[in-house]
Length: 187
Image (cartoon, rainbow, N blue to C red; front, side, top):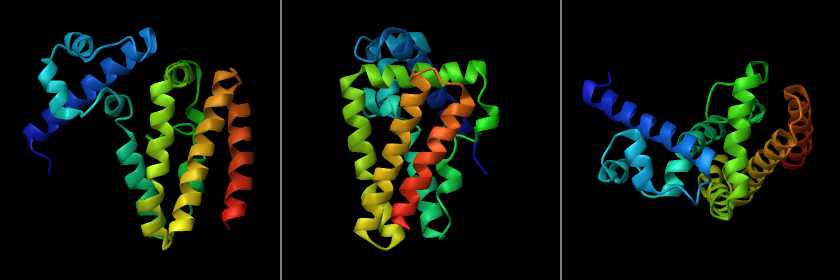
């Protein structure tokens, strides 16, 4: 059972992340400083450093949990299809949940990422780094690298379709087609 202190720390971390995400989306990743995030989140700048090692880590704060979930599925021999065939890997959102406000929120996040050379590079590096733990879970370096490549391709497909302002169903169809092809190649 999680202690009150742990719940408060998790709530503070999430509040900082939420405030930062809105600032990044509104002003652009490079334009926002951690001091501005701290002021908007009503915390000391040092508090941000206690939770996040860098501004990029703050932006991609959900990614470690996503990797953990993917590695657990691969290690258990489960298909990654159900985890990858959704609009957001970091949460329980399904295509049926994707409506106006949620779709706009995803669009804002992806537009921020796409507009930032720093974030685009970090996304590629981050996802590439997933090959090793996925490979360890899958029983081989090649399979891990291929799975990481599929995950990055899936992300790029979602981003492209959402930023084209396609309706949710069209985004789903495009992602599904890419996953069909990619996962068939891996076998």
